[in-house]
Length: 452
Ligand SMILES: O=c1ccn([C@@H]2O[C@H](COP(=O)(O)OP(=O)(O)O[C@H]3O[C@H](CO)[C@@H](O)[C@H](O)[C@H]3O)[C@@H](O)[C@H]2O)c(=O)[nH]1
Image (cartoon, rainbow, N blue to C red; front, side, top):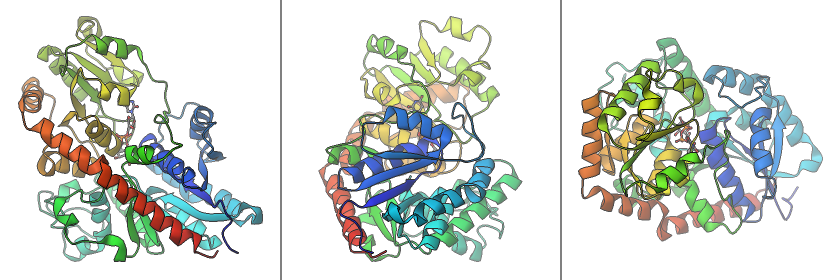
């Protein structure tokens, strides 16, 4: 069967805010390039994103995940994994086998690799979507080599966390930065297995669409054309660029939670470059109550104005009397309108967990970063931010001195602003947009010439 004129393309994001956001931007970019996108998410997420984006021209469908949550609060990694492996596949399979569906391709977040298997079984072409830096994917791709050379054990435990990984075309990344080193030793081993299984499934892919820009690392750019690789690596990010190259696109990020916009007016009244914005993203591992208390005291001691995005549950752990004492110094909101906050000239720097979306949003607004990576790809992102792009500093704790030193360093580095502008141009400027357009053209040509 030949693909119909307006090919239907199914998007399967991993069910978390930091994954659904870039996938929705991608779906929107495909919409403006003549595809008919369908985004499938678990019911709790579906309810949030479908009602706020109903006029877009994207079809939203709900999958049952067996974890019905009324408020889209994050579930833990392993219960999501169980429902992805056991509950969602038959629903996607029924949809794909439906003759009327006429699906040209399924785009699958690599963290939701269950859907690769289903699409393969149904004979539908499938592309992987990698939501973060290519550098982080290179770590996953190198698992067999890391085991072979003994850098990690057969169960994924690094023998020496401070040992360099020496991955081709990458700056110095260390064994302790590996993506699966989250939580207890048992959890780390289970995550390692998760990635090994993902890697197995990736073998059948023809394309990986990467939510990043070419030449993340300068040396990779030189004389290197990824298009001969299998799967083909196509740069389709970062999400901001998709919006800039589409005539019909998401105007704002889809948010699982209500934004508290009350901080914007206050922000407007602050001096330029004075406010610290603090957020540790939406998911993975919260930083923990004692660290939150420590950070609160360090912020208070700094005397600097701040906006802190901290959900209500964690706000309960703030030091007694803190909220009252800082009522003129800062604002604490459960969920901030982050992009608007970062765009505001009063913001001087962003204390961040280094999630990839947040990192790129900060670059888009040329905001300096104080990095406190917590989990997963955030360690790799932070290495790039600090050592490669030199647009931020890393702190390893929330003691008053550590925080103050970190803030002073980024605020006083006169060249950091210039480096940020250069990076923004490289990642989101004309050349990056041409590269992104080229990726869509290659992919579209491939897909439209493909018989299913
Ligand atoms: O108060 C807030 C806090 C966050 N955001 C938005 O939420 C998103 C957060 O994304 P990200 O910075 O990537 O962090 P996480 O939500 O923690 O994302 C997970 O997914 C990302 C993509 O896979 C990974 O890079 C991260 O490490 C992982 O924690 C961004 O678009 C923010 O603008 C808000 O709008 N308001």
